[in-house]
Length: 252
Image 1: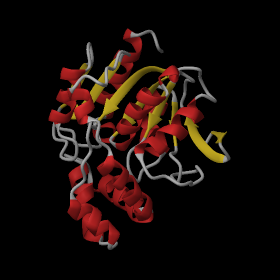
Image 2: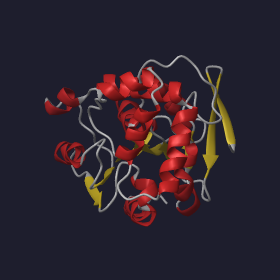
Image 3: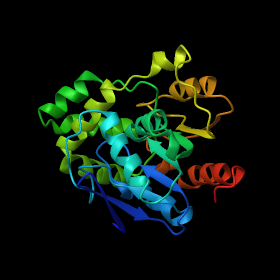
């Protein structure tokens, strides 16, 4: 933790990267800002700990919008406007930030996410019961070709935060903007980058292809031999896509 800001009495923590560029990384379910260590080292920016994760205070969270409120208002303490990069749940949060706090958005980067994020009932039921086998399955579905040590680290993280993971996945399960995109109610008009691993089992490539077909001038990067945790499995390819995007729009 490098920075703390206060949002309505809730302490929100950020990790600072090598360069203080206007880029906010938002992690996914059950994770924290350390997910982005390799990006902070090479690219820069700021990685947030969502409420109840990492070094941030917990508070009453019932939806993706609730998270978006805290992220957007915390980010305003750092920059007037920023690029918001979100993975999975984080990608849903980015969409809610765009819809509800657009005044602080320079651009968006959607990573392994969707316009709707249904969660397998067996995952939710298993987590309710504290079933470790469900965690094993969830971790296996999160990676394509990761080393066992990386999977074990993720499993440990999830086991230590099982209640928060369940809360996050319940928020994902309720998140659904699909029809609003389809009928044209949602029109994204800021520079948009979409990244997905070609072997993503949790948010398949078709989810990202939908964004590509719906968001004018959006760029889609499909990274080969990568699963849902694409930023961990394919660091170089992932970072290059981010750097290319930031350079194209003079955001570095």
